[in-house]
Image (cartoon, rainbow, N blue to C red; front, side, top):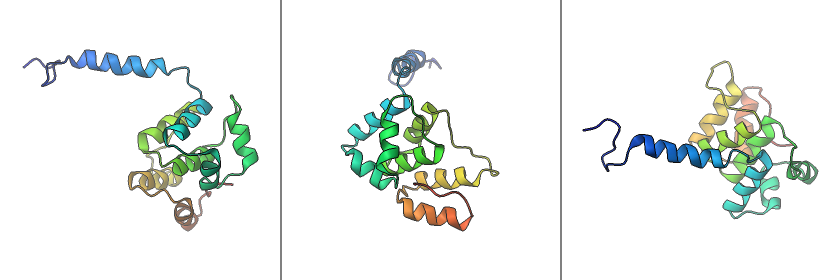
Length: 140
């Protein structure tokens, strides 16, 4: 079997090229555009999102303006409010220049990652965990 062909006969390089093309077509997507795309895709209202994220309307209004980049904690709170999975959360963070580290020296990131991977999206519960380790809390 050709190592560059999948079982269905589709070239892996063609498949990857198509995926890369799809990603690059969204290259110009800003953080705020992606956030509001996620809100629409989840069928949620702005009020539902900022209420679940424990952020106030003023901050959310700033975020709505193109070019404003909130803090990493705020983005994570929004991701939890939207119920984003790990890749979606990483994508949203990366559009604002952030990521989640797997380093043990970054316990905040470890807790956030594990919460997402285990489908734990309640910010109050996550904040309890963060509080246990004397780490910054999510929301405003």
